[in-house]
Length: 270
Ligand code: URA
Image (cartoon, rainbow, N blue to C red):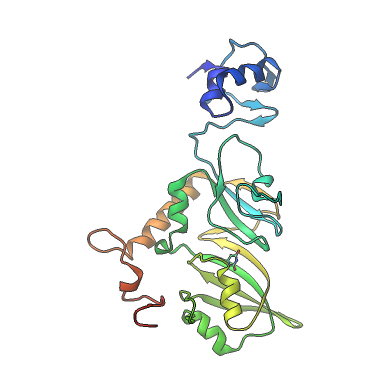
């Protein structure tokens, strides 16, 4: 539906109507490539390409789903008090509050999703939904077969526990070995802590896959929008895997009560 540009910019969350009028008068707004300075001009979000300061305006209600190949050295946060680089620095400003889906450490690179859709975020990160995340992990030294078996079974220490991981040997280079690790949990610094627990420090960590998505094709720092069917499939996969863990009542089974639980049970001490 066509609406006055200032009203449209205000409803998109760009600025108040008065500020938007000032932006238009100052020649900061363009519609379909043409700078607009007249306040009565009308436009349609559905049809017209509206830019402010050369950046596309996206309606704040519009859901955005992005996948990025995060480089090392960027924080997964929406702002940083110390002014360090953040992943949002790598995206255009759509005047919409988008944020990372879960986290990768500053020193981790690879596949990161970002969105402004809270339901999508919950579906992707809830551990009961068992979305697989695949990492390429370079560690110092060569873990023994027993150590790898321990991680595969689901490591339990006095302080913490990790669900079973799928682990595959990839390569050995000098003092380092590289492994492919598949987990569905998303605990803080999980992969680093898993290998720390068996005495092998992680030297480099990259997330290569998130469910069926692969980072291949995106260079570090590059991003793309997810396609509609990719978003649909991610929701479906999250729901499908979550179903397995549900009771008849539809509520998720508490971890401690799951028959197949590999999680540390504080009461039982295992
Ligand atoms: N595990 C980690 O240790 N770090 C990450 O960034 C992701 C998984």
